Image 1 (cartoon, one colour):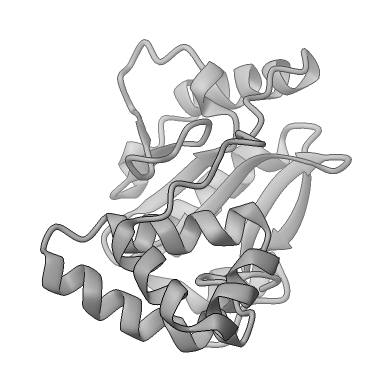
Image 2: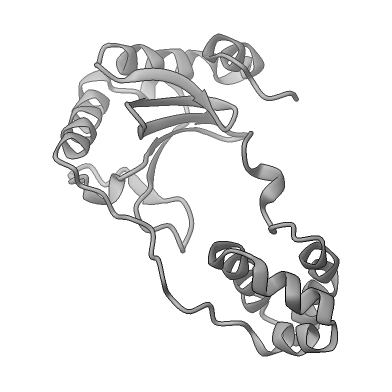
Length: 197
């Protein structure tokens, strides 16, 4: 499915979830947040700051609070998207009845206030990238890959390092190294295909 160029197009691409999406969109539209499309999905913020994202998945619709780590969660509805997620939190909805307008608006209003107050958990910078031994050994054998890896940003280096290190079995680690070496030599980041979408 092609990436949506507008929120209306996004809604039409997700007909199964349209009632939930429209109910959440109406709440967000009642705030001062500006609606746009980022990463192919609806995003709400002001200025250059993203505050909330909206996305439909196979089994649920999520509201993404970009700095959700600062939100009080008296209802226990927020969860981290992934284990490594530090700031972002998501709230999942499975049916239109799950969207209780007053409750959702309360979370949205607090997210806006937190953004206004400048509460932001910035990404870690300057931390040394810990390269797994399997990747380090392979880079040592392939000088072109080693040179390209050294020229990459710490973020791209960290993506590759974490990809290899996250495998549980040694065989999986080695298979991942073999798969990513050509990408490294081309200077391509592990997740580049998802950027600028």
